[in-house]
Length: 230
Image 1: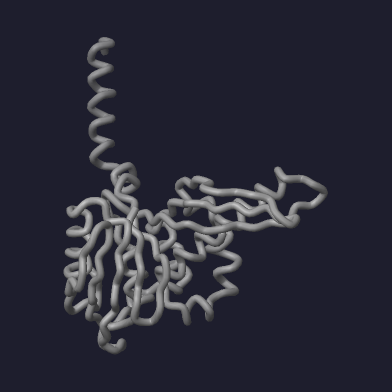
Image 2 (image 1 turned 135 degrees about the vertical axis):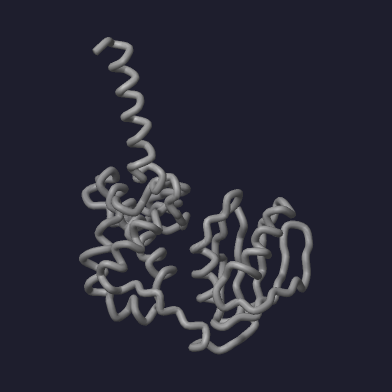
């Protein structure tokens, strides 16, 4: 076989494999969530390097815990805390795609860092399903209907707010209607009629992957939800 023919065979094989093996395509379609958490550690013997590393690990675990609480109800998390503690919560490196330290300081013998981490929901959902903790048992009929007052801050583009409004009205389970109460410079207030409360709405929203912005919960009660758009 000539060199030219050999190269053609290699090229044909690679091309076939690109269609037959879906691994790369799946990884590019991974659903991720960005969260901010804080990690704290004690500084022993003035060893800031070790304390910083421990604070980073603490923040990573907090990030995993936060996303788990977005995926499954609080009562299931509480009932599964032992198994989560020795499985999912110890696998930070498997779920965290990247992170950035946004603030760090040492005070009163403790090292504190604030981290913004990006986590894979696909990997985490898979592991929770294997453990039998995550099930698609979300039932609209089991939750009372109420109106959640949503305040959105940090709006820079009307197009982003339009995407968020359409997502609320069309893509969030349990939502019956969305009404705009007020809109001003960089902020808006909406009434969301839904089966469930503000915590459920926050979990559903944070499961969505928006292309041009991210949402962060500022504060929340049973029937109010304040979000920041970045």
